[in-house]
Image (tube, rainbow, N blue to C red; front, side):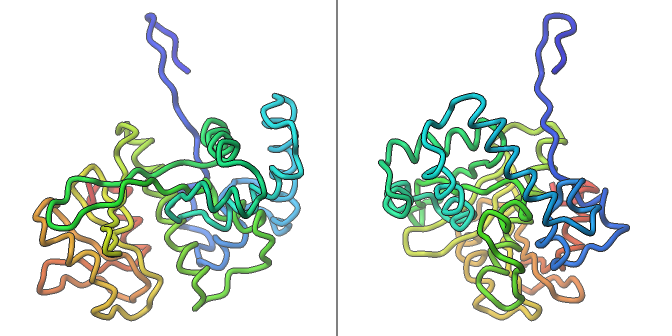
Length: 271
């Protein structure tokens, strides 16, 4: 916080970012297991560090501040919020899974956002050809914490969970980049048409980024970006994946291996 000259500013510190880890083990298995909290990422005993973090978070941020009076349901809420991380938020479904009211669920999501344990990605709503969805997505701030709260020992390649964690990791990096670069809070959104077509991230309303964990891009992986291209609203269309090499497709979509995307993002070449 800077109070000089009567001006106040807020600077958030995020988990480790790509420029800080690229010289180390950057396999997705490593990132998904340990997460990117410095103490966990740099330790061989990352499970203990994540357990300590989760326990201290609940004790110090929630219990000490008396934000939540009934902790057992809140623990179950955290597990469900971790399982739903990256999905369009449906408060009533979460309330039913946890066994509490929808009002409580909304308040508890607010607490997660206020204490920086999670963040919302709002919908991009300027498309005309296809009517957009109006609900936000919610992500937990770190994939290691997400895995720990879910009670998973590993995220197996080829599973739906692996794809979701891949997307969550991209969300973490984009959010950190926008925050550290001084962009406003509306720098990242997502697009989901009511017919089901979706693009994971819209950056500064200029760059459309879809994230697929595939090692071999197929036409079905491009459907969301191609649908959004018909609106003619973006300057760039990028598919982030696990291909070996970048390629520019004939339709103008840029296919980038995730490490190339992250390097370009932090070098200021994406936006």
